[in-house]
Amino acid sequence: MAMAMSPQDLLAAGWQRQTTIDEPRLSELAENYRALGYAVHIARDAVTDGCGECYEAKPGCTLGTLYIRRDPAADSAVADELF
Image (cartoon, rainbow, N blue to C red; front, top):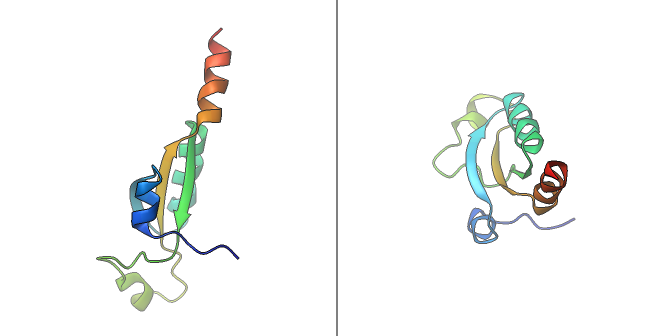
């Protein structure tokens, strides 16, 4: 199993933090960003930075942080469609 990247590592790798939110909205947002041509990463570890009440107040909370970055493969596919 791969070790989860820290928020600092994700930002350094070019990911942009968008939001921290619970399911099912988290999956809906991820799907929408993918449809727009973004690569999507959902971090479920270390989402308690400034937040964490959800874990204590709601057992089974599926809180996650959504990160996006431009997917170069999707960009080239869009360029191909234009010509």
